[in-house]
Image (tube, rainbow over all chains, first blue to last red; front, side):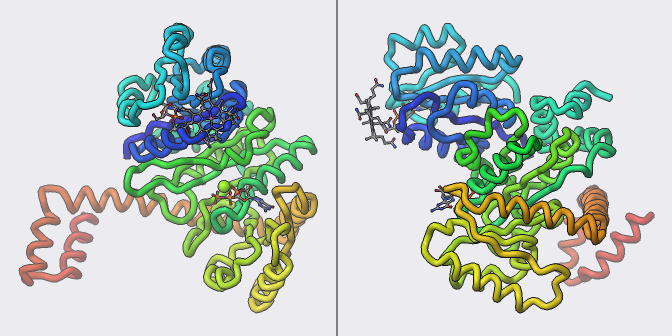
Length: 132
Length: 312
Ligand code: B12
Ligand SMILES: Nc1nc2c(ncn2[C@@H]2O[C@H](COP(=O)(O)OP(=O)(O)OP(=O)(O)O)[C@@H](O)[C@H]2O)c(=O)[nH]1
Ligand SMILES: [Mg+2]
């Protein structure tokens, strides 16, 4: 059997909006991926520790709190420090258009805002996963 | 010795994680890894946590592990969840109940999908346990998928099986008793804060008393993992079971048995490959099957002919 893509779906920060994360988790499972869901209120440190122990190929973060400009780049930075920056990192949630270029410049590969279809996300992962 | 193995033996989490990935996906690499680490395995106390879906297996594991790391122990955890037979994907959610452990230096947690393997574990679980063992942990916890009828593979991998029940199972206890009750070394009724826990414990005790040919009568405990209650007692029982296994020679006996089964399974799986290759070569099987349906031969004659030609 072909190796399934392993994805960590994580909710950084303090907001309790988990519908988007759960929806994405189910969609990725249905696309044949192994999804590790770690629940709400994860610090960037917890996310990176889980990603390393689970040896995931991809980290998808869901954030609707407004703290994305701080939390998402922090995860990329911690991954780099561990030499694990071959993991594809992207995110989704309520994130203003204006913030997206800045996030991308800091290593967030893509940002999916409300209304994007799960098919787009699945295609994105399949086309961009670096290690696998 | 490769760098990966060296780091793994030194307890490096990244190396442990990589090795488990290799074991989950590539047969050749699995073989190479297991051969190298074999002599460093066999030291950890391997504990299987099983029981119905939602019984609190992950929450209990979280609390027991916190108890052990407070005593300076090192712990590995493998949490198995079902893979969807339709998509081949899975949602592995046991970490949600173990969030505090993510940053503990002396804890390593790995989630695994069953990937089509029945029996409550995945095919790779057993070898992943060996990797954790070689990495120097004192305890390894394996959370199986919710137990139903036949998920009893855990006995082949664990030294101690902790069976987690919940109040109000009632008839469910009756329905899971066949084959499943027998594998528990320790029983715990979790969610003792809910109505009916003592009664469930009594029912389990009665069921266990019916079984006269047990070498050791398993204890039945109450716990409320959600409130961290009953955990000290549970950890004591885990220790007592480990002592029992050592003192009676049962540990060696179990491991001899399990290793023997493991070798037989490995041989079987290679033999199967030989058989498939041979029978499918040059469309031999297709021809034979057609002949069987056309009544010009029968299944046993075909079997004997194949065996003869395989043996050469
Ligand atoms: C439902 C909802 C709630 C529910 C949440 C229920 C739950 N368990 O999730 C409740 C009522 C609890 C709630 C509470 C609050 N909410 Co509210 N809530 C919403 C609302 C209306 C919809 C969110 C939702 O579930 N959408 C459906 C899901 C499927 O969409 P989604 O999460 O956006 O996901 C999609 C994409 O973003 C993307 N995506 C999301 N995550 C990911 C991850 C990956 C990896 C990928 C690839 C894609 C992806 O894909 C999905 C599909 O397209 C939004 C407004 C809005 N229209 O977005 C406000 C909103 C998010 N809430 C908001 C606020 C302020 C709050 C409260 C603080 C309100 C208050 N003052 O009490 C509280 C905070 C609660 C808490 N503990 O954090 C604000 C956030 C403002 C901000 N970011 O600056 C919003 C934007 C409303 C607003 N316009 O002000 N909320
Ligand atoms: N009332 C009560 N609820 C508990 C207790 N322990 C766990 N729970 C809750 O039971 C639910 C399931 O707990 P888990 O630990 O995820 O159970 P599980 O057996 O690992 O579940 P699966 O892995 O899905 O089979 C969660 O909502 C827990 O909060 C307890 O002692 N009392
Ligand atoms: Mg669980």
